Image (cartoon, rainbow, N blue to C red; front, side):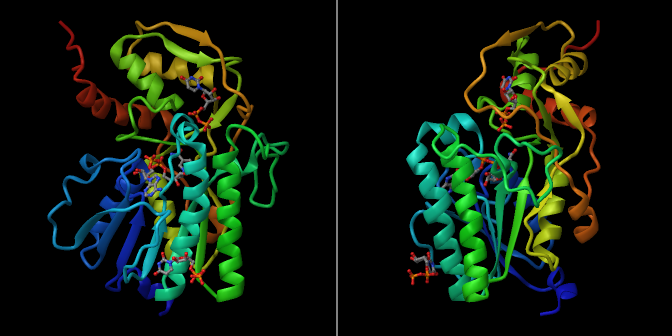
Length: 326
Ligand code: NAD
Ligand code: UDP
Ligand code: UDP
């Protein structure tokens, strides 16, 4: 089918990990196209039905409790393969399960794609660059990754997943797309998943100190989830296999992030320095030249606007209403 028509056709789309943070926003966007049927397969390890509640019972929507480390038989045209815990707290909780999810889960989804002739998109990660020796990171950089560290189940797992994708593409002609996602934030992030943006917003809303891990000068680049979902859909429906970096190149130190959250959400909180975890990358910023050229994509939401967009969702879930000025 010509590429131009893919967006218009009646497609049945599988989203693995669709009950999670990015997955549920992706499902919202796919369901808005009235011609698509969407199937979500999720084991609810870090995701929840709550994230999909507005679609449950909809005639074009189906939710399956399924672990991707087990084979899956469905008939679909496209597979967005997101299933994998993304937060260090969760992926380190059961590292053997994390690497099985990345390796066996991706193998199963590729076997499925092969059987039904579906196009498959993998959400890989900027963690494939490890603690990068090149800055900013382009897709041509091979990375600086510890193969035996506590993060390896995730970053080496995703590296193997990318390898499997390319081997199925070369050997079996499977249509693949690989996104290397950089830190993404927005409503529906798990409140206590330990990631920096969700931690700081929850702390600011609860009136607790913002915990900056030492040294605080380490950098990250944060992409708002709506921008990320647009990038994923463009990548799926474009002609380039990737890997393509998707992220927001605006780079901030963790101290700067804390100051922004404090100023925007609760100027009364303090900022404290806490111990860091092993193998924490010192700096990370995507080079998105390829995404701009190949997909015509770049993020639109700047950090300070995105943080404010998260506040209402966190206040509602934490049951802490905004103070009204007397
Ligand atoms: P998330 O934890 O909110 O979502 C992951 C989903 O996968 C959850 O619903 C979870 O229940 C499900 N899942 C986990 N293991 C599974 C298994 N074995 N079988 C079936 N379902 C399983 O995470 P997210 O932030 O939405 O991340 C989605 C994808 O994007 C992941 O592949 C992650 O590696 C990638 N990614 C995210 C970020 C980010 O900043 N959020 C950055 C880089 C890459
Ligand atoms: N698989 C799946 N759904 C399918 C087809 C295959 O989950 O519709 C799984 C299958 O169980 C296998 C994996 O995908 O473990 C790889 O499949 P492939 O056909 O490439 O390899 P083989 O089955 O020949 O080992
Ligand atoms: N971080 C922090 N305070 C927190 C949680 C994390 O300063 O409460 C720092 C952490 O040391 C890292 C950065 O924020 O340098 C991003 O961490 P996160 O776990 O969000 O993402 P990742 O390390 O996977 O990029």
